[in-house]
Amino acid sequence: MTSFRHLLSRTRGQSQGSITRLIDPYVLGEKLKPFIFLDYFEGRVQTGFGFGMHPHSGLATLTWQPHTDVRYHDTTGQSGVLPAGGVEWMNAGGGAWHRGHLLGQGLARGIQLWVAMPPEIEEATAVGLYIPPAAVPLQALPDGQMRVLLGRYGSSGSSIPAHQDMFCGVLELRNATEYHVDVPSEHDVCWACLFEGQATIAGVRASRGELLVLGGAGSIRVKSSGPAAVLIGTARRHEFPLVLGGSSVHTNPKSLIRSQHRIRQLGRELVQAGQL
Image 1 (cartoon, rainbow, N blue to C red):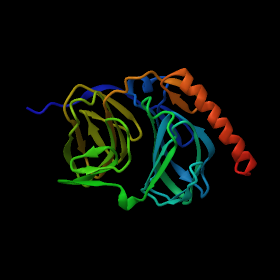
Image 2 (image 1 turned 135 degrees about the vertical axis):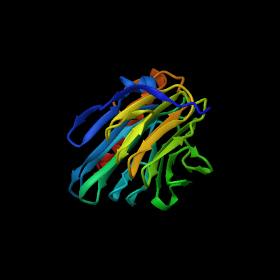
Image 3 (image 1 turned 45 degrees about the horizontal axis):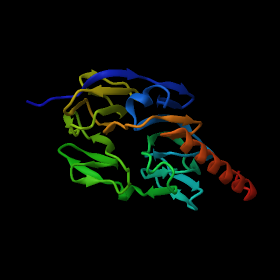
Image 4 (image 1 turned 90 degrees about the horizontal axis):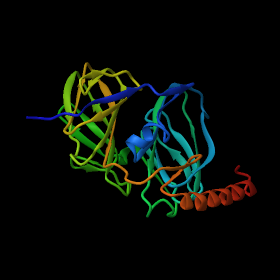
């Protein structure tokens, strides 16, 4: 007999303009770590909308914008344009700055996820990966596909080194159907967010941009009434404390202090280079 995950809680988050914060490190982040932050974006934009140069440390950010190209720049020395549907992964390590701006206009929808890193990684050298759409793995399903943003699903796996046991992907269904998303039994963190279309998740009708926190063991039952996309995250729980500092998250205060010093140093270099 198939077992399924069940609903623990649901939230529409807090919205400011076109951005809705569904997970933050101070509330749900503690329950859902290593997933400690999730912004859902939906709105009409003009070319140039985005975020200026800003720092992180101790965590990695995963950004997915399927509708418009994104111009990026970071302090690992990389800059360029990531085509719509590509994945940006910035493992900030002991400190890094980055920025991104949309190049299209009109309706845009996307997400940014923060992932807490384990102690052996939180002060490592920063790494920025910009994965074009064609290199984002797709796992074929009977009536759709799973777009693997992080980790593995079935025989498809992301090239991103996540440094822990986790998965993030987008279930894309073409028609009205029911699909059971397989989740490893050891993944005791599980959530889903309806990204497009209409669907029932874990037996409850979801609203677009709403986060559903799931408990129990087994698969995630998704039933769509037509074409739909569902963002899903699952993981083995991050066992370390969350020590917070602005846009930094570490496992202990000393690591946070060292990284904040590195961020300030990088900031001075950006000012001298006229980039901040």
